[in-house]
Image (cartoon, rainbow, N blue to C red; front, side):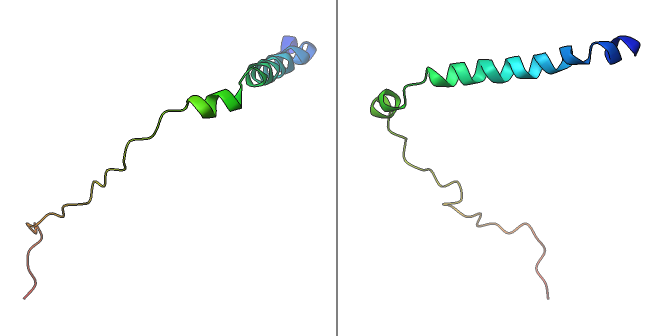
Length: 61
């Protein structure tokens, strides 16, 4: 635990390095070319289009 108290700044370097790396990668993304080359989405499929005709619950009298 003493080592952690003396070298706490090393624990800060790891997240800072991850943030810097993410910012560098995001700067390389070209949004205009991505949006022009983006493929069309397939039509939406409704999973609830056909309701279950059989009622599994007991009927109330």
